[in-house]
Length: 282
Image 1: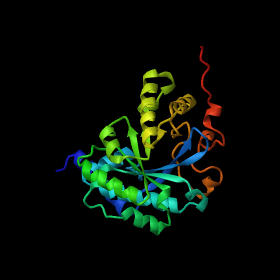
Image 2: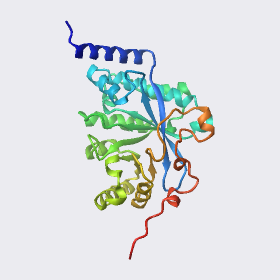
Image 3: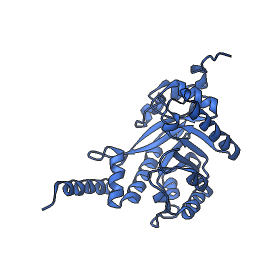
Image 4: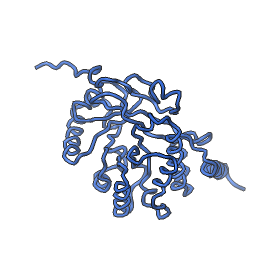
C-alpha cells in the first residue's frame, strides 16, 4: 500500500505531465523600467501553472524531482513566446526577458535552433528577446554552458544573468555567461539606501559592468528610496513590486500601460525626479 506522501508525489507528477502535454502554462509579465531616464523598458515573462501547481516554486521543484525540468522549461518558453506574439505590434517592440535554466541550456536533448524556430513561427524578432539565465541550480559543465550561451548570442539574442549575488549565480557563471544585463538580487537591493556596505559593493559591481559593457538591473525594488540609491550607484534598470507586479499582458491592458500596476513603471521623466537624493549635511 502506498503511503500518503507517495500518493501526493504521483498526483503532482501527473498534474505536471498534464500541464506540459496540454500547454497549460500561463504567462504573466512584470514591468522593467529605465530608472535613470524614465519610461517602460520591457517586461520579464514569468510562468504560472494551474492548481495545484499554481505556486511556481512548487511547480519547478516538482519538475526537478520528476526529471521533467527540461520539458517544463521548454513549455514555459513556448508559452511566453505565444503570449508575446498575441500582443499588439506596438507592444511587441518592447524588450522581453525569458527565463531559461542552466540545465536546459546544457541538456543533451536541447534542439539546436528550437527557440529561434519558435520565434519565427510566432513572428517575433530575436533582438526583442533577452535570454535570462536563472540560478535555480549549479552548473556542472561550464564549458558546454559557455558554448551554448555564445551560440544564443550569435543568433542575435541578448543575455541576462538573474539573481546575481545569491545562490548559484556567482563569478564563474558571470564569466561563462558574459551577459548584456546583470540582475542584482533583491538581497543586495533591499534597503541599499541605508547600508553603506551594500552601496560600496554595488558601486564596485557597477564599475566592472561599465568596463565590460554590461547594464545593471536592480530586482525586488520595494521603496522609492532604493531607486534613487541605485541610480546614484550606476544601475540603469529596475523591477519590483514598487514599480509593478507581474500580471497578464493583453490588448486591453496595453492601451493604458501594459502590465503596470504602479505609476512608477510608466514615468515619462527619470524616476530620480520623483525620488531625489536625501539632503546631506556637508
